[in-house]
Each structure stands twice: as C-alpha cells, then as structure tokens.
Length: 594
Ligand SMILES: Nc1ncnc2c1ncn2[C@@H]1O[C@H](COP(=O)(O)OP(=O)(O)OP(=O)(O)O)[C@@H](O)[C@H]1O
Image (cartoon, rainbow, N blue to C red; front, side):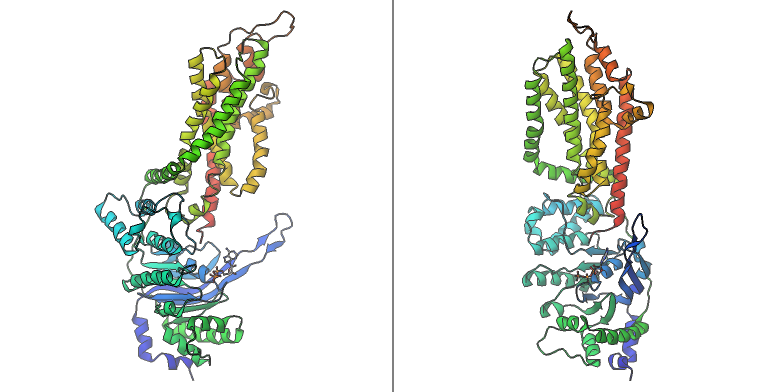
C-alpha cells in the first residue's frame, strides 16, 4: 500500500498545491571543490558533497525548524536558500520564482555567531545599519521603522549599551533587528537559540513565531530544541548527510515515522527522537528518503509572484561617509589608548632623537653625517610607524567585513579605512618634528620645521597605503610578519640613506620609483640641504663636501624634487591601494561569513 495514502488524502494534496510556494528547491547539490597541489598537480583535497539532490518547497507563513545531526548540512542548506553559498552548486533555488542569487534582498540570514563593530552602542549600530540599508534616519518613516523594531525586539532599555556588553539573547535580538531592518520576506536563522538559556531561547523563538504569523517565511536550523521550543514550529525539515529526509508538519512527521515503525516514546522529546533515528542508521535514512522522494513529486509547485528585488540604497560617497562615521565612533571611544600610543611611539622617540642630535648642524663635515642620520630616522620612524599601524587594520575587522558583504562596496570600505588614518598622518609627523626641532639647529628654523612637517605629512600617505595593501593581501598576520621585512628591505635601501642610488645599475635604479622612503628622503633632504650654501672644511681634511647641493648629489637625490616626489607619492599610493583593494575583493569573493 502507498504509504502516502495514509498521510495525505487527495484533497489535502490539492490544498497543499494551492498554497503559495515561496521557496522552491530543486535537486540542490553543493560540494567543496577538489584542490590540487601547485607543483605535482595531485589532489590535496578531494571533492566532498555537502548537500545532495535536495528538493522541497517552503510555503507562505511557514515557521520551519531545520533539524538534523551535526554536519548534516543544515547551515549550508540555509545559506543556499539565502543565495549566499559560495561553494560550487547545481540545481535551482528560487524565491518567489526568482533565482535566489539574483534577488539578495528577499531573504535575510541571521547567522549563528553575532559579529558587531566593537565600541558601538546598540543604537549606533542600528542607526548605521538603517542608514546603510534604508536611507537617512532623518526621514520620519525610516526612523519609525527603526523605533518599532527596537520596541518590538525589546532593545529599548539597551539603546545606549555597548554591543559587546549585551547578553547572548540580547545579541541575538540585535542581530535579528539588523536583519529585519530591510523588512525581508524570508528570514533564515542559523541556530538562533544556541547558547541561550531556556527563557531567552523561548523569547527569541516567540519573536520569530510572531514574524511568521505576520506573513514572513521563517526558517531556523535548531540544535536539540526543548519540547517547548519545538512545538512552536509549524513545520519540520529533517536532514542528515546532506539529504532532506522529511519536510512537513509535526503531525505528518510523526505519521511518517510511525509508518516505518518508529514510534516516539511518550514524554520523549520528538526532535531528539527524529535526530537519533537518522543518526548513523542507514536503514532508516533509506526508508525516509524513498518516502520523501514520492512526496516531493506530489507537492512541488512553483508559484511566481511579482517581487521587486531591493538593492543597496546609498551611493558610494554616502557609504564612505557612513563607514567613516562608524570608525570615528570607535576611535573616539579608544581616544585615550591612541594618546598613550602616540606618547610612547612618537613623543618618547622624538625626545631620544632630540637628546642624541642636540646641536647638530649641517654646516660642518661631522654635522653632515649627523643631519643625514637625523633626517633618515625622522622619516623612517613616521613611515614605518604608520605602515605598521595600518598593517593591523583588517585583521580584527575582517569577520565584520565578510559579514557585511553586500551592504556596502569593497572600495568604499577600503577608502574609509584609508581616510581614518589621516589624523595620524598629521599628528605623528607634527609631534615628532616639533619635539625634535627644539634641540636641533635648523637653517630658517621655523620655516624649515614647518616644511619638514608638511613633507612628512604627505610622505606618510603612501606609507599608509603600503601598510593597508599588505594587510589586505596577507590577512593572516603570520604571513604578513614573514613577508613585510622582505619587501621593506629593498624599499628602504632605495631611500638613499644607505647607498648612493645614482651609482646603482640602471635596472636597480628603477626600484626607487616604488619606494615611498625614497620620495620622503628625497623631499626631506632637499628641504634641508638646499639651504646649506657652505660646509666648513678643516685645513687638515683633504676631501670635503662643499655645500648642500654636493650632499644631495652624493645621495643621488633629484633636483626638481617637488614635481617628481608628488607624482611618485601619488603613484606609490595608487599602486599599494590597488593591491590592497584586490586583496579585500578576494576576501569579499570568498563570500559571506556564517
Ligand atoms: N566551506 C566548506 N569547506 C569544506 N567543508 C565544508 C564547508 N562548509 C561546510 N562544510 C562541511 O559540510 C558539512 C555540513 O556543514 P554544515 O555547517 O552545513 O552542517 P550543519 O548541519 O549546520 O552542522 P552543525 O549542526 O554542526 O552546525 C560539514 O561536514 C562541514 O565540515
């Protein structure tokens, strides 16, 4: 006898067919690609199938629990439904009849792990997300949407609480509020109750159920749900080993299991029973699979609805502005740390230099060496300091950036991160030169000190680009630490402080054009040595450097330094920025982090 004859009457089947299908999945297969060794071309990692021929459909107002043993493929399935799976796939997933990947705004995913920008309050986070996703909060209807969500998700009393100080349940609610801002038709939650106590778990599930009753489709993967939580769901999707074994109401699930002689004992948690029944029991899995194949034949219907896909609302400049606003909030909170950092790294260094070079003057033969050393130390301290502080810009923020893929453009993020270094590019050189110049004898003292400051401020820009470029190319600090010194060496060799660049063979000479140290040293040396008309030569010394021009010639610095150095700074900044942008884009392509 047909097992389904017991489960669905013809009328029931017809009624199900008449319901709206919101999500339709047909033969979905997801796998990890085979990886080959670079040199031997032998497979180092074999292809692994994660989802295998999953077929099913989710209807309007469904509040579905996706259950199954660990590694069953629940997260991969949900991410595929949201159109955010970056692994190779075949088959189709349609949302309201449209390909899930073509309509990113239709389904929002609430990931298992919450990632927020540290240092922001709940309201600041929500305002940022609202402004990014919807538009300015000055619009009354947008502000109303935000306030209603804050009220409904019980976040009102935590408006000013820093996000990192929220409890697990509150973080889940904040994550949910963030996803709901754009009013998605489909809400997909990956383990929304994991790590929560029963009160908070029920609170979150209650909110999700209300959303489903309000007209949304809500799917949740759920680990060991308690009976109280499990009974809230209107339907169940049971998965194991990448296969969808069952999809239907809880009553239907019970009937299907009973039809294959699997009876849930009284007072036993049904979810746990179903998961246990399919964990490592291939007989049960096969029997459920054959039942499921027949069912999906009966109920697969695809109803297409006129849906408009939402796209990002804000233009590129607004995105940069908002990202800078968010960064400025975190920087404001960490202001004391930055002041201490500035004191340690710049003021103390400047004081050491001031003591070591007190009274140094480039008008004596001995002084030439001192001033050369001083210029190199000031330049490299600022350039290195800023490059290395930029080096850690993305390390901590990468999970956040990957979580926010699609909300703003990668270039907007890179540019905003770059611009966030501008205050340091001014404060560091100005502080260093101010303290050092108090002790050193400079020609036209105030004017030269001012020119040093301007030159250093400009020359730090490619240094920041270099640091950010490296940070984005090598997002792992371990590799960064190995690579940086190898790249640093030729770049600062070309600064002219250690060898005469003009005497290098032609092909090596060209390396200087990508060295920001070279442009900085060229400009700084020109500022100083152009003003030295005469250098004393003791009578007992046979070879002397006569004036500043001779010093510049010895080092191999250029005569028309302003044009060359400005063009060079622009070129090097663009060079490292493009490499950095490529690095970030590569991370973005790896896809949404869940
Ligand atoms: N990008 C990936 N590369 C390699 N393997 C992956 C990748 N994503 C998922 N997998 C593997 O696919 C299987 C299913 O993973 P998935 O996270 O979808 O399972 P899950 O049912 O959500 O598990 P859990 O309940 O433990 O969170 C796991 O064995 C996992 O290791």
